[in-house]
Every structure is written in C-alpha cells, then in structure tokens.
Length: 447
Image 1 (cartoon, rainbow, N blue to C red):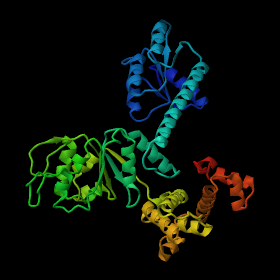
Image 2: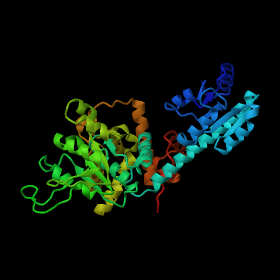
Image 3: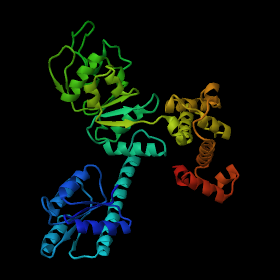
Image 4: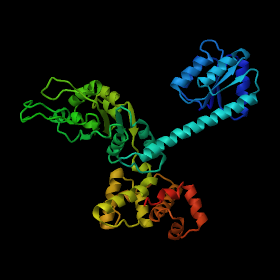
C-alpha cells in the first residue's frame, strides 16, 4: 500500500519529489491530476495526500472537499504559490492538515509528511482500540480465541453489528454460527427485541411458509386460530435462518420477495404486514456452487451475500483449543456441580492432535464428558493414527505453547507457580511466552 499520494501537474516536480520520498523510505504514488488520484483512492487508501492547489481540472481544494466528506481522517497537505496563501489558510480552517509554500525544500515537505503519517497511524490505532473496547464491553455471547482469524472476526462483528445489513454466515457444522448471530444481535440496537432462530432443515416443506409467515384462521385444515410466524415474532429484532441451503425452492422464491419488500402476508391473507427486521442466514454449503447447480436460487444468493462472514474450522485454529476447553470445563463444572480438574500433558496432546470434525461443538461435548467421567474421549484410533499435515517442529511448537497456556490457566497467570508447575527457569518461561505471544494478564482471575 502507498503511504502517500502526491498530485502535481509538473512532471519534473513529481520525479524529483518521488526520488526524495524514496530516499526517506516513504512509498509515494504520483499523479498528474486530482481525477486520477480519486480513481486510485477506490482501490487503496494512503496514509496522507499531498496536492498542489492549482491544477488543470479539479483543484487541490476540490480534492480536500472530497476527502473531508468521503475519506474522513486522511491528512491532506497542500502545496501553494505565493498568491494562494490566503486560500491555503482558509483550507486549514476547512480541515487541511498543513500547507507548504513554493519554493520549498524536499526536507521540509518530508518533515511535514512524516508528521501527517504519524498522526494518521495514531488515528487508526485509536479507532482500533475503540472497536476492541466496544467488543470487550458488549453483553452477549463470548467468542473465545486469540488467533488472528478470531480476532478479525470479533472486530468485523463489532464494525457491522449495529447496521441493518443482512448477513450470511458460512462455516462447517459446529463452528458456532448461531453464537456469531447472537453476538451480532446483542451488539446492535435491536438487542431489546427478539432474536428468533429457525432451522430451515428441520421444518417440513408443507409447513415452512406457515412457520415463517404465520396463517389466518381457516387458511387450511387444522388452522383453528390465527397464528403469527417467525418473521412477525422477530419484528424489531433479528431473524436467524440456519441451514438456509435446506430451504425448499418454492419457499426461496417467497423469501426473496420478503427480503426485498420487508413485508409479509400471512398464509390465507391478502394484507401486507410491514416489518422492521434484520435477517442473518447461515449455511455450511457453498451457496454459489449450489446456485450454479440449480439447487439454490441465484438471485436469493446474491441478495443474501451482501456481507459474508467465514467461520474457521477448529483444526485451523488449534492454538485456541486449550482456552476453549478450559472455558467449556468451567461451564460444565458449574452446571453439574463438579470440579474442573487440570489436564495432563498427555491429555492436552490428545486434544491438540485431534482434527475435530465436529469443530467447537465437539470440543464442548468432550469437555463435558471430561468433567463427568474424568477422561478425554476425542476421536478414535483411526483419527489419532492419521498423519498430520504439519511438520514435526510445528507440532512440537503447538504442543509446547498449549502446555504453557494450560499452566497459565491453572495458575491464573502466576509466573512463579507456572515456573514450579513446568519446572523451568524464569528466563526460559519468559522467552517461551514471548515466542508464543502469551501475556500473563490474560490468564488472571477476574475475582
């Protein structure tokens, strides 16, 4: 990504400044016009923009106005001639970061540019911290894990939760699609209204429209009274359609119309009922391939595919297994009135080596069995004997990290107790924790 965009219609100036930026280790992309720079902005966002005020076509002030409205936060540095000083001062009042008067030295421009880049970095870091804080303070289901893919998922949820955009969740069975849907609901302004979950694969084909949209009294045999459907029940809140790929084709046609019009008709009625609703659909199938095969309506797929969240399988985030297992242990121990015993190194190794085809749901069941029966039952001999795709060094490193993490969990982050438990010197422990990015504060008890 370019750190800065430089806009000047004089090629000699562009070439000279580009060389100066290169010597200062600043990646610059140069443009002869504002129009070209605005086109490039649609593809990438620089940390700062430098532009001459007087240009053929759109001016530097036109650029500043566009940035202020559509790319908020990007510092704009203006290059001015002697007659443009009053104009530049007004531009500062309108939001420009700074201006530099011709003639100027390359060193002076680089100094201002570096300050602008630093300011932009601080702004972006602050926004990231605000999103992280919002996610950590929000009530609702916890999405546990410290791998980058889970951190990115939490951040994305925080960014899109309080919008009205419909969401498509894609992931294997057991990856936590309903958990993510509930998290989206709880982090939105709809949290006080209903979260309504429907498993499309569990509703008989002849009842699905009545289940979703309700029916009037006498609409069909057995309809002895008026009944509202799941859509109406979710009015003001969120409707979660799980296993959307299982919905019958005829029901898909009506669903598409409802999503477009945001209104329903109960079965046996001609009255439109407007809805304020957000729809989150979930699937374990590739709906694009299903639509190409004729098993799913392509227009419905495009309608649902506004924002798609991919949920990773557990085998792709094995670093999270120890923390997830410990969490499920505590929940199960509380539920059954049992004690959450620590895992041995061999038991932890068994968890790490298993592929978890049932994903987080399978791990949760395994933790409950461990609390009840006192032993790990993960997979079978056939699975255990399968060769890992990871190298020996990768497997050893993953196991070592998990053992240290489990010890930190057991000791609530106490370095002294962890040293004693693992029988390692303090420096060795600190080196290993730094290597695996383990922070002791993450394991301290809240009590």
